[in-house]
Image (cartoon, rainbow, N blue to C red):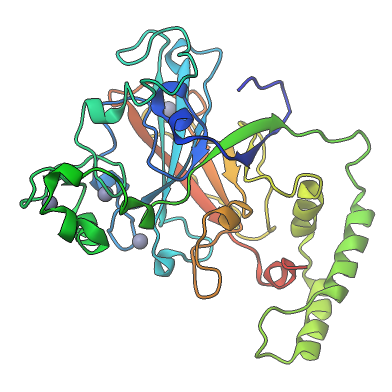
Amino acid sequence: MSKPEFVVELGFIEQAPAWKLRSKFFPSKVGGYPAWLALKDLPTTEELFCRRCKNPLVFLCQLYAPFHHKEECFHRTVFVFVCRDPDCCQDNDASNIRVFRCQLPRNNDYYPPEPAKEVEADSHTPGAEDFNNLCKVCGALGLKMCGGCKVARYCSKTHQAFDWKAGHKTECKDPGSVGQKSTVSKFLFPEFEVELEPEEVEAGREKSEAEVMREYEELLRSGRPSHQDEDDEDTENDLVNMASKETDKQFQKFRTRIKDYPDQVVRYDRGHDPLWVSSQNKPTDIPPCPHCNQPRQFEFQVMPQLLVHLKVDNTGRSIDWGTVLVYSCPDSCQTSRPYVEEVAFKQDYSPISSVMRNN
Ligand SMILES: [Zn+2]
Ligand SMILES: [Zn+2]
Ligand SMILES: [Zn+2]
Ligand SMILES: [Zn+2]
């Protein structure tokens, strides 16, 4: 990803054959198994636990984001994991999300210094499964083995139980069939490539504050509350009243900025300001990098549009976010372990903007 100064790169979902999204091609992708960069010393099972329910997270996305000025970061990928349990998803709280960065120099133990040919043959190698047993359900380190077939591996009892119900009960009697991954899709998100392109913002397109405010007020007047059990008209009046006192210009800026590229699922803008979905609940206490003590910087954000592609349940309660911000070490400092945990921050819509977001 070459990154000219001050240009935001936008990520879009693309269909791609699974073989193109494997480790050796350094993909940016959503869903499926993680395509680990360093193939040994993967994050531990505990590091991939949800901080809230203590169950294993599911892989959400990874972005290939090398630092061109730094030899140790010739290859660099940031991985995002999330808990699938909607009960762990709380407003403005990222304890159901964890983020790891990984980097490798051009000359490393796994990949040749020149890019691999984009062909399907041998696309699976090298892969983390060459060096580790991986959990059949989530693709993370699988230190536990099924006592029946002694073939299936799992990161945790939770995933073993999940897989047993999802079909391993039958499969286990026929160890030759284990590893056909047929049961796995029930846990993983659908897999896509993420293609990054520079955002083009036309000169003079940045709107004046007055313009933004006017649009915002119009929007409020046309706003319909999404909760059907409330009195629509009263709620609408409340909204307009609320807007005159406590406006959320930030949300309108958000909408204006993404209007030309409504399908963006990621914004990569390292070292700059995120695009906030609300002027409320901005992070105030992102901890510094524990390895070099420098303040972490914003690196990229996952946009709400990604939720559409995840096939998460839309009718009942489901996992959700306004935006997920990733903060990382500004130097991507070298540490003794290849996978380094960084910080996620989840910003949700303020009450007033959540009412309007469907407009
Ligand atoms: Zn959880
Ligand atoms: Zn697992
Ligand atoms: Zn088994
Ligand atoms: Zn650091």
